[in-house]
Length: 171
Image (cartoon, rainbow, N blue to C red; front, side, top):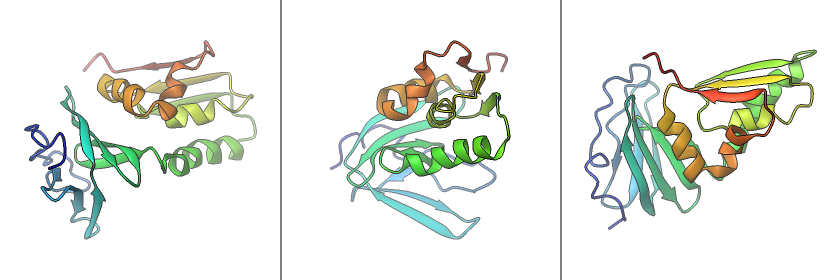
């Protein structure tokens, strides 16, 4: 049995509120596989799971961190894989560097819903940047990224004073 499977949230989270993908409930099967399926593209993703170090129902969403032999820690929000340790650079670097290099003089950047910190980390490598602001609705994603994905979350603790992150406290 995979460690962490006994948590009640792991056995079936209702994802009916995710209209764009119609994702099936989050499950880690007793055979040790995490599965994410979508009717939108008629696709299914399976990742072998070694353990579940964290499961949480935040104010806004269901969050799971599990460990995969091929990917390291994997962050799942509302049943949808957000990122993993071993392949995250391909995603974050493209989101950060393509627009930064396409703009003739990028000085200010607003990152919306980037609580894992990866895009912020990568835009902060550009010396021309004067200000970078990250806004994420869920403090739990930020907190868990710092704990389980510290290589991505390093941007959240960047020493540049113009850089900040905040959650939406008005909701």
